[in-house]
Image (tube, rainbow, N blue to C red; front, side, top):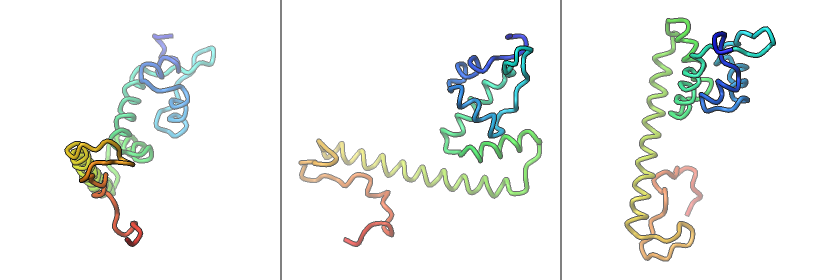
Length: 144
């Protein structure tokens, strides 16, 4: 079978995903429907493993599957869509916001460690910092 393609289980194992994820990505159009063997088994080209790694990496970076699908489609057509730059700017702003949030989380964790807190819910240290206070949206907080 290797000369004709990889079977579903082989692709899933090599890519570190489960078989249902592989089939779901196929239904979503992220992966092309593979050829079938004479026995009816899916026969994926070896580059499918790399494509799955790219999809998973993009998800880890915060891209939704819809965004990944658009990027893959743009790449397949070899020319960008008219709004690609606008979407890239919007994604960049989203990434910058996440970086800001992560820095706030890091700062809160450093404060907790510096204050030697023993519990986030029932801390007994005298100067316990409020965890993740920098992330709270003032408009969403109840009046205090």
